[in-house]
Length: 286
Image (cartoon, rainbow, N blue to C red; front, side):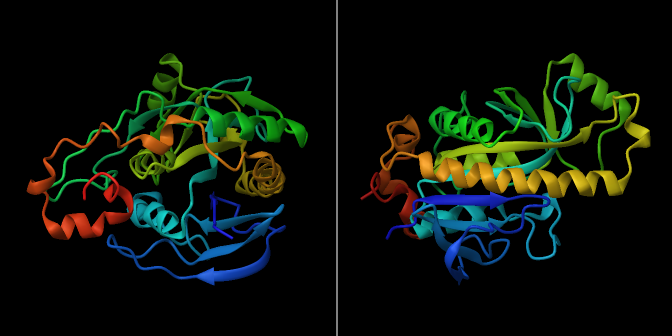
């Protein structure tokens, strides 16, 4: 069976308990090594691949993640949809710890991260006004609600650089802009998934309020870890339910994201670049 669905586990989510017929797949990509081996298996009757974003034992900083290798590895496995889970801080009072937000927008506050497969003689500009696959996000939100989670549909995720958390001035500014949650990892994944014509949606798992909240200073590491663990259980249930609900064929525009995006004339593209990106651009550059 083809591996159709990719799962990226963030802080606290390092495994999928329901996964059966497990096999570890270590891949090398043209962009280097992914965060670790992909664990392939069967989940609710569907073939999936799971990747722990930060590696075994949570040893890779957000700024150190090889986003290109992680997403390209999923493409190598044949994945057409990626469900991501990540811990976030809340920027709104109504988004409480243990809630799930399924954002539909991003705001970039990172610096110098590589977030495109292109370059090296090949130029492409994908549409990114709507960075999340609406179809996949709807299934994810419905699934979260069905397992009893408090779900907020839509919203803006501020992707900060980290690894430090925000200053109070920054946190207040993001709130004044109307941002909803803040994290360190999802934007680059979404950009690269779009370039690879893979659907992408994320479950933003609220662990605590960001530092704008007057009670923030009383939040302990123990409390955050407890929330991470509880969120991980909810995320596993949600993802399993979403996998069982996904249609076998895609009707969204993600599958054709590159159709009008490549600018470079085919004869001008270096062969090495064509070879490296064959999985992504092969159907457009003969």
